[in-house]
Length: 287
Image (cartoon, rainbow, N blue to C red; front, side):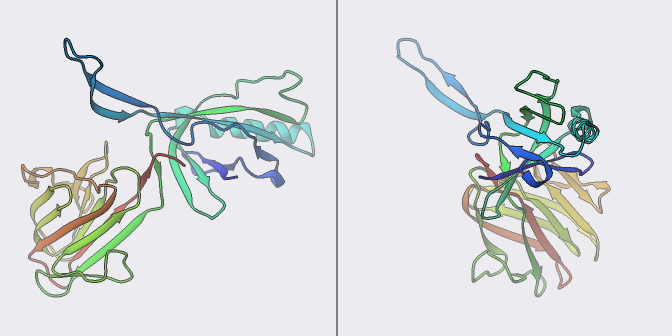
């Protein structure tokens, strides 16, 4: 069985699978696999059925049957219960559910408490030093996130790149040609960090046909961060200056498609000081 934990917005971790410390995840967890899907569909007069134009994954709900107790005293049990309630306060913002499999791999999802700890003191649900119930979390994103993947390249001479080992991007890379394998079930949106010098940055996904071009003089040691993640899209110089106006009209905040992606990275005005780093988290449909 996997282990499940909740990390609140302040970083406090509650391990729901921790028998030795008085926590147990009971059978019956729901919402760990496929999300609910919605379809945009077209119907035509005189034709039976419909055509599906678009499929969209909705946010998910995760339900965890939890039991917890304190062996020493009623006061210790109440302290644990109240601490959990404080940690789950949804007004504090999104927490993080983490599911860890027996082989050590872990996937996470943003989550907020919605129900389950209202207080049920019936004979089968609680006692002087224990209680159990189903804690429900709302997860705005349908995707579980895998471990962060980071790849970095640097310029050997002006205008050419080679990977800094160890990298899992192929054995032979020439002049910024890169192959990246997205292990996830869905698109993954990278964060690009380019350390100058540079006068223009061109990032192309040949697999999808998308381009991202930024024209801006970047001095030695200055850093451009382009965040393509949904609902977080930004382009900043040194964390402060907005570079959105320096992006070309043809630019898109493109994603890595599932599977292999052939990329081309070009940095005009580069030297041996120039660095290009790509970081992303694979997105999965199941924990």
